[in-house]
Length: 207
Image (cartoon, rainbow, N blue to C red):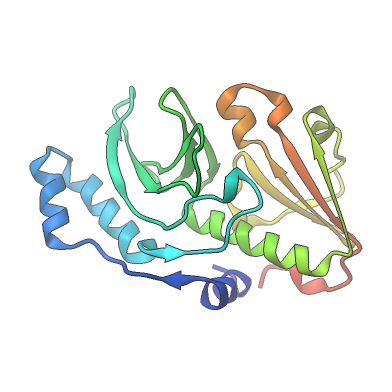
C-alpha cells in the first residue's frame, strides 16, 4: 500500500482481532470447503480480519469490520466468500473473489469494485485525503457521470480500480463509482465526485 493508505489505516483504523483459529479452519474443511479456499480465507483474516475503518463515502460505508464467512461456489466453479457485514440493511453484501477481488453481490450477480482489498482501502484513504484538501466538492449522478471529461487525467494505479476508479489532473481529483450501476443494470446509479482546487500535490502522487 501507499504511505497514504498505511497512514490512514494506522491513524483511523482499529484492529479488534484477527487471524483464523485452527477450530474455524477445521470447521470449513469438514464442511467440504476446498483447502485452497480455506487458505485464502485464512490469509485474508491474517491481513485484514477484524479491521474497522471509517465509513466509505459510497456503498453505505462498506463493510463495518473485515471478516471472512460463507464461502460459496459460482456457476463457473470459482469460490467467493463474504468480506464482512454491512453497516446497515442493504440490497447487497461485500465479498472476496478467487483472485482476491473486492466486490459486491446480491445473490444473483456480482460487480467487482477493485482488483484487491488493498485497492478498496486505497480508495478510502484517497476519499479521506481529498475531502480534507479540496475546497470545492461536486457530485454528479447517472448519465452526467459518462459526461465527465477524463481524457486529460490519469488513474491512481494503487486503487486497482474496476468499477470504482480514481483520476487525477491539474488541481482536480475525480472518483467514479459504477459498482451499483453494474450490479443492478441501472446507469442512474452511477456517481462521480469531483474534488477541485487541490493545491496540495501529495494527494495527486503515488506515495
